[in-house]
Length: 450
Image (cartoon, rainbow, N blue to C red; front, top):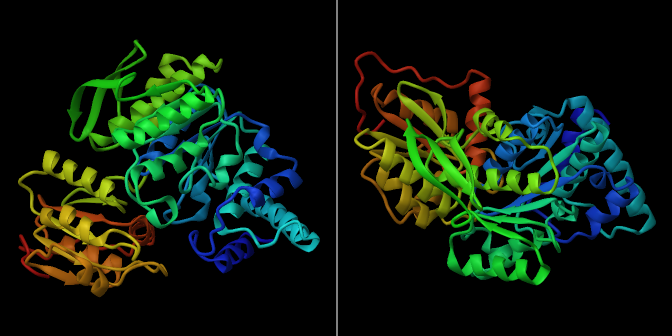
């Protein structure tokens, strides 16, 4: 298969939640026929409601700085599917993607013909098997795996991790994971393996207790970042934080979170604690690698600044927990600035609750819709919103919505595009194609309703 044919095949499978068949039988059968490539290198696995992508990227950066050829598997992608599969920060090439994906497809066809698989695997299962195989073929020394959703039945959970990380736990995907924090935590805790160390950043008492009990039952050593890997002495550097972190009494001083927002300090601390655990497991991770790993890490689409005047920020913020984090950043670092919000979301998200968190921050709200089957239309968002500012503009095309918000802004204002990583991806794609216009009409100041 060519790279283009691989993409067409993936598109035919539908989006990641369409036809999702949660369970490990299919991915296990595929990997077994491939010679179990996921067992050829050690791995870390990262689950959670928010922050798991940032934590994965920071941990991978630390391992790379320590000299390990490091694979990183994440989801979803923003612009190109290749973003999901990286080695030492570089996306998988189109040629390598086609090579590994074609091998997976061929194995799947044989298993289906033999009756060893009842159904064609999902979009996510195909990509997970492709990532595992590519890491093996590329000679990865270590792999960091971000769980797609949940944990217990996620396709990434076939690995026997050297360390498991669970970031914060909150409400999201309740239709799949359960309606209580305890139920959601139980699904996330499924990545915990007997005797394998665990790092938890969970602060919700109900969820944290589930993780503690699971670790105790499996004899898994547990480091909880709120107590045993505490970040302290925080100093803001224009929204990025310098901090100290003591992991079970072992001090790491003058660390710098690579990403904007106080909440990213917790993700950075989780990555530091995971690296500390891996060092105890025998990996050579010097202190300088931890400092440099944080400094060099990057993770697009999380309070990512793409323009300065006006300041334009992109953030996924697809659930209430993520929206609260973004709102806290705005109140702490952008107070007194006029903010315009460009908002899009999927229909299955908590639109009403998120509107109460994000919409009050804005002098104007632009409702838009990325090209995605699950995306809510501007009219659907408006109907579901529980908070409506005085000025709401419905503009279905994301790049046009952002351009209108920018043209209505003074240079010292802020434009925030948030609500879905699909929105972030659509805007970044427009940016790469030079289809975004940040220019302001001469003499235009604060707009009241573009």
